[in-house]
Every structure is written in structure tokens, then in C-alpha cells.
Length: 106
Ligand SMILES: [Zn+2]
Image 1 (tube, helix red, strand yellow):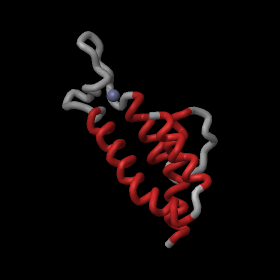
Image 2 (cartoon, rainbow, N blue to C red; image 1 turned 90 degrees about the vertical axis):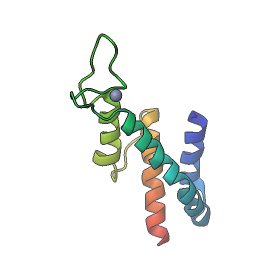
Image 3 (tube, rainbow, N blue to C red; image 1 turned 120 degrees about the vertical axis):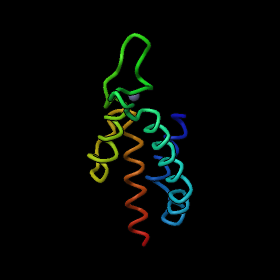
Image 4 (cartoon, rainbow, N blue to C red; image 1 turned 30 degrees about the vertical axis):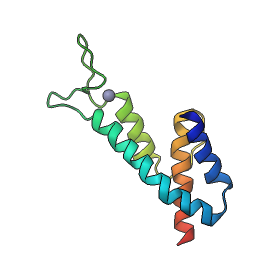
């Protein structure tokens, strides 16, 4: 899985514009689908808890860490370049770069 993300980052950095456009068209919908599935699993229930992160004995109040990370990456840092300090930041960087490349190509 990490290799796949690394490959996408590598492509976003090094691929020429036509290749990048093709990769963006095929891969961005998969990334957004992945985020949707992840967020759907971590959507707060009617008691305001995350059903995925809550255990039998301990409830996790929403927003959970997954939801906060998604918010930070997709909303707060969505258009701003960030240093890839951790692996999870790499996804955002790749998406941001791909988005810019798509914008340039139009
Ligand atoms: Zn959660």
C-alpha cells in the first residue's frame, strides 16, 4: 500500500504532462472514493461518537483522529503545499500536485 502511494507521488513529481493527466484521471477518483469510504466509516453516529473508533467499553467522541486528519488534509491543507513530514502527508501532496498539474493542462 505504501509503495502504491509512493509510486503516485513519484508520478506526480516526475511524469510529463500528458502522462500525469492520464494518471490523475484514473487515480484521483480512486483516492476520492477511498476518502469517502474512510469518512463514511468514521461518520459520527446519532450520539456524536465515531462508531469505528469506539470500543465496547470506551466511546470515542467525534470527530475522531481519522476525521480530524482528513479535515486537516482535505480542507485546511487542501490547496497549500506542505512538507512531507510524515507518510500521511504524502497523499495530500500527491493530490495537490496532481490537481495543479490538471489545472495547468487546461
Ligand atoms: Zn473514527
